[in-house]
Amino acid sequence: MTIEKDQLEKRILVSQQKLSADFILRNATVADVFSLRWLKADIVVSAGMIVAIDATGNYEAVLEEDAEGKFVIPGLIDGHIHIESSMITPAQFSRILLPHGITTVITDPHEIANVAGVEGIQFMLDDATNCEMDIHVMLPSSVPATTMENAGAVLHASDLHPFLENDAVLGLAEVMDFPAVLSTESSMMDKLIMAMDAKVIIDGHGSGLSSEQIRGYRAAGIQTDHECVTADEALDRVSQGMYVLMREGSAAKNVRDLLPAVNAHNARRFLFCTDDKHLDELIEEGSINHAIRLAIKEGMEALQAIQLATLNAAECYQLTDKGALAPGFIADFLLVESLEDLKAIAVWKNGVKVAQHQEMLMKEYKKQEPSTGITNTVKLPNLSSNSFAIPFNNDGTANVMEIMPNQITTKKKVMKVPVINGLFTTSIEQDLLKLAVIERHHALGTIGLGIVHGFGLKQGAIATTIAHDSHNLIVLGTNDEDMLIASQELERINGGFVIVQDGRVHASLALPIAGLMTDRPAKEVALELKKLHEALHILHPDLDFHLFLTLSFISLPVIPELKLTDSGLFDVVRFKHIPIQVD
Image 1 (cartoon, rainbow, N blue to C red):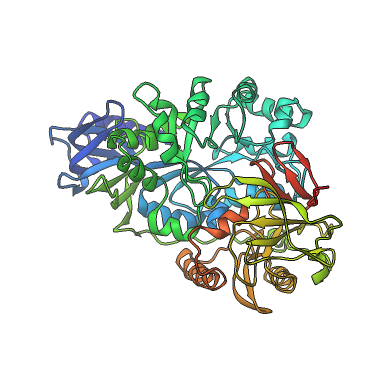
Image 2: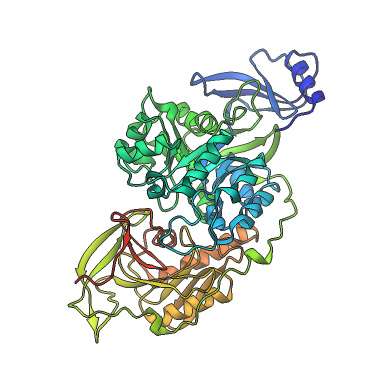
């Protein structure tokens, strides 16, 4: 927040009761996140900044409101999120989460960067200026995520460096290519040095890394990790000087498992993040407010959970004027009646009420028009049903991917699969389905094929262009014909989701911005998403996990154990491509 000299003078004079404040929220039960206590006080605001937490009632203001003793907590901060996973633009994203009390997010736009490069990053920065929410950006470090797949762009330090001039940029985003770090690969070293020279934050991505490998990350200047799935992993990261971001998203839900690692001595090294969360869940339950609720339900003291979601996050990302209700801090706060449900009655941003009763009070800004460079990104080769054939010349012993519902990790299984006339045949009874990842950025014609267990699809096919991190087209099916139709329909609508049953498109959701997002109103998109899920239940009547989000991580070759890219089946543990057939 920039400030003029007259504003600064006014703040000081208001703090000394020599001028009237702009706004006072009276009779509040104020969260003191420094001392973990509640204060009965008025919150005094001038020029968007808190200038006093006053227990005397002596301050005067142009505008006042009575909190009637209800709880007031600092605006919540999401330490790491990919806004693209919400399927809406930053401007629309802001409007659905501010009513939940999330006033600041730190986002990594590597999803759109993997599709559209610097043009995608610039779109996100530009659109974020149309938001009431503060959206800070970390520069994508791994575009492409690895060399084991074909992405839409390649970004070097020289491509990223100009963005450091933007005040919204806080640092280098999650470094996920751990072999490049630990082998001191030149391009990765350039990015790390760029961030170090600029004295900005470097985020980590330590999924499955050993303590020794984390030691290498720390030597590289990497400061955070949001990929912990066990308390032991979290404690190891903290002991090595890292911040641990406890993740609660749509596919990866790790807060419950990590909470045992948090204690009175190390709590200041923990915060919450979302990472990836779909629109329907964001609208229904919010994000960081939901993580706080969960932590309290699991036994964490309320003020401790609030501290993690506010002050800890602000300090981790060097946001020195955010995360607390105290003089000198930006006036971002929310009013709640119950600490158990943490439902925001009203939300203030920079001292102005922006939401009330879960609805925005402010009108929408004019939306940022995307260029054709990021709205025409699905370019497929000529496909036929034969494109999905998986040949075998052995007894059918195969490397099979087993999904773990609501997790982004998979298991590698070696098992016999049904083979007829030398070709793998899907089996509904054994829950063995076909999976294909098709390069869609440059029409290279590369197609990776695999066999997957655990999705439980009973008929038809589903396809999407949301496939982390390179976002090629991924299609799952019970038969080749429906897989072909689903793929071709995705190209026609410029990306999104498609469900096909018995040779016809049963439902779809177009996401024409990089095949990842739409700029349509969030609630309108949510209604279409609901119809999509209803159609999905026809193909999978017993569905009890977030299938689309789980599917979207099947192609991410930095998350254990077995993944599929457009170049083929990839063993993450051995970090190499492997054949489907086991000889």
